[in-house]
Image 1 (cartoon, rainbow, N blue to C red):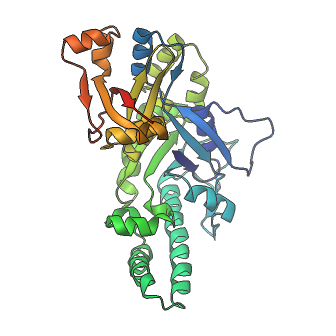
Image 2 (cartoon, rainbow, N blue to C red):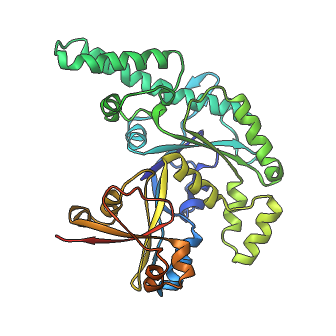
Image 3 (spheres, one colour):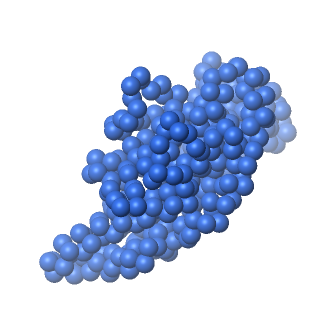
Amino acid sequence: MECGIVGPPQSGKSTLFSLLTGYVSPEGAYGRREILRGVSKLPDSRIEALAKVSNSRKLVPATVEYVDVPGVAVTPDKREPYPPAYLAELRGVAMLMLVIRDFAAAEIPHPRGKVDPVADLIDASLEFIFNDLSTVEKRLHRLSKQHDPLLKKEAELLERCQTALQAEKHLRDLDFTPEEEKLLRGFSFLSLKPLLIVLNVGEEGTQEAEAKLADLKANAGDLGRHVGWVACAASIEGEIARLDEDERALFMDELGFKESALERIVRATFDLLGLITFFTTGDKDTTAWAIRKDSNAVVAAGAIHDDIARGFIRAEIYGWKELVAANGSHAKLKEEGKLRVEGRDYIIQDGDVINVRFNI
């Protein structure tokens, strides 16, 4: 799964990308225009506890892939659309992370001339709408020249989208049937994607970060559904992330954050995408797998390997806490009646440990 990192220039997108993925920017990369890709591992104490009782040689956490797209300038007298290459990358991601600046730095000039989080957020969200509207109008123009009755439903659906977009409404706020969602999937509309807004404050603003975030949320207007909100101080938190664990905890406490930006943002990403984590564990490895909520045992098996899903017979299920309490003993779990045998329709729960029996 991929998340696209977007936002105005000088908002801290690349700093946040480095914080999430460990990417080290080369010297002289200021003002770069290329697209960056990196992987972030989901911090999860459960995987460490399971690996310990299973004597696992390897730990494989769940991951999120982040795509850092260079900023597009929006000033009072100029609106620059996303270049085609950037749009192509953004259309392929599952969700968007919009980084909004709320820090002053004389050495990092703001394109607008002043720091204004509300204006930046409104401009960026409107850019999603305008890009989607352009796509809709181009497609409707092509459809108007065709007389295939099979395309009538698509045209009617796009006209409905056009009406919403012209009213500056995000498509994520509309209700679509499963059939309509399938028709829209190929367009990968930006305003239809889940949106995580990350308010990037300076070190001096960390104690008021939540209040700043609440103020931004109150003045941002209607962004529709499936929107998440996180505050961070990317620059200073990036420096803290390089310290030893004991030192990190001390400095994070001084900043007023209970968790690291990595933990807060990756967790918010999972929540917005509707993902949960299940585990497989043994002496070879303990692995965390991410799947959508309400997925059944066959879907979970398929996340591990397509062949396991095809040959699915049954799944042995137990909670991660139960396995840790039993010190990794499956025999003890059976004794206590805590090991369940489930069929293909069982709905996987967050924290389930599964062992799939299959035959191919």
